[in-house]
Length: 347
Image 1: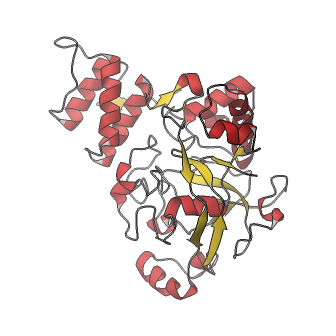
Image 2: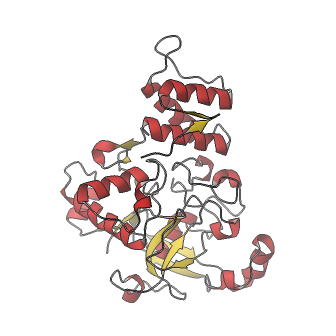
Image 3: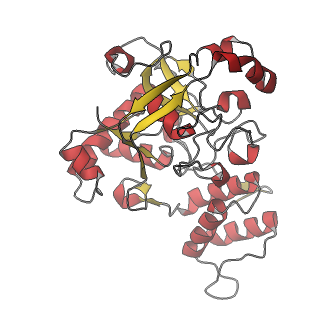
């Protein structure tokens, strides 16, 4: 189910209407090729809209409108025959090489961060001390888990999510209103499914089938390394905030189709690592430094413990969009602000 698209009081229902809406709003001369005068095919509109989103050729509010129309027409970046995963050679999984990275925030940097982004000292102290973490290689999803992916999982597995609102999001927007348990259930289902699937691409297939890797939520170090790479940058793209690179700290008061902010793509080619929705991790909230050998830190069976989310969401201040910021929340928590992405990882 997608949210109805209303433009000037009229509901947009087909490709021709979508084309007219876009022309009226954007006034662009970069028009798609038509089969004949006055007729625009659905396939043509789909290609055109994906192009407009991925090239960042339009202002953010117009890209988000296009994303909404694309959800209605069908977002061709994702394949319904392969569980609505991305249409690329790796099904959207991006390799993060083994090695060390800088995690957290230096105590001596907190005064400057407070001056630049606001907030009191307690906002930053949970990110200290800054330390090096050495991770083995893993693969992380290019995009957040989408509404279509989560709804497909619920349909075929007969899973009952904690909140029915998790099934009402547009197909190409992040799945939200998901609890931590919902996210783990999706991961477990996808692990089993991709192990059995004959078309699962390499090396993912071998890692799942022979190396006993799993699809799961990232732990905090995996998420943070994927977001800020190895150099300790503040945001996914660098040290200076830019509202055109993420759906956060702007007047966009809702989620956006994944990938609507291509200028915010980071070194690894990951989308929406900053903004759109907070991302669940599998980590239990605890003080730094992060010890990978501490099994309690990632105990999936632990009950009544706060889990960590990362990345910030639409409507948040930019201080929460920093890659080092840690949000703690009960695993029962759910709202339009919370979603997730997955990793393939040794576990």
